Image 1 (cartoon, rainbow, N blue to C red):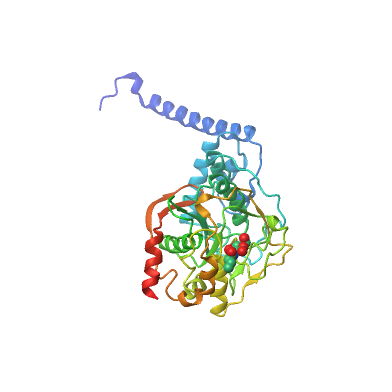
Image 2: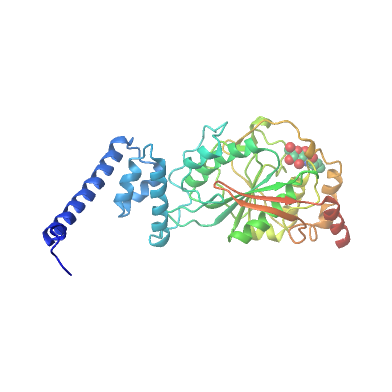
Length: 369
Ligand code: BGN
């Protein structure tokens, strides 16, 4: 190689390299400084545990959270990759999570999804979350039967995600939407939620959740214990009183093995009412006691709404409940007939759209009897 061009002399190349390195170092420093200046220095509670780990550079950027959201999000993504690969937590989560606050001011409205997503950066697509600071004792699927209540769903998600994260749960949120044309079948949608969610992850506990009920206390744990639990005992609409002792509607928690033992819910309840009473009887019939938290704690707010033409009171419900016992064996998760039209892994929940054919569902069970 010839070196007669003065521009390409060794000295010049060396100098150029030095300048480039100095330039890069200065650039790095100025970016960091501007981050710190702009930032509000607000350490987000959920990232606090990261400080303990030796990735202080990332923590520093997170601490100086500022307008550059894209940068923070990009950093969080990197972080998650690092955490996923190397830093597995070693401690099992405590039975009483440390960050619970008790009685809450509930959110009565919610920002549009685009904004809300930014509030819950640690939730993974499909509405999945796993705590990084400890290993959860069980995996919980929150199943929400749904139709035509977009605003309620947004409000519920806005309330639930922060609570479930404080409860240090390994959870996923599944919204099971029934298409128009048939009467709403809440119990069957919950069965479908069970069937679809276990295809995606090994859930060991199910929370069946009405879309219009907002928990007022984060000590109402969304986990499963030795017996099925009725969570929404005290609802504002009923003046925080239990309308009758065998009520099992609203929000319930059931271990997977218990749910399977009773063959899930009945699929026969089209329209409003009775499906929860049938489930209560199923559980008692199989020897379970239903547990509840104290009334002063398990309080919920019900979001107001008008009665819906797609969910008229079911005239057959009294008869179905009184004859239910005959069908427990055949009518449930072992005979689920539906078509899954779509599954969408949205940022804060998994949306599963299904169609149910009432005539077919009723006929199948008649044959089995
Ligand atoms: C009850 C309904 C429940 C409902 C509660 C609270 C019936 C069946 C009668 C045999 N039960 O009356 O499904 O959850 O009210 O709204 O109608």
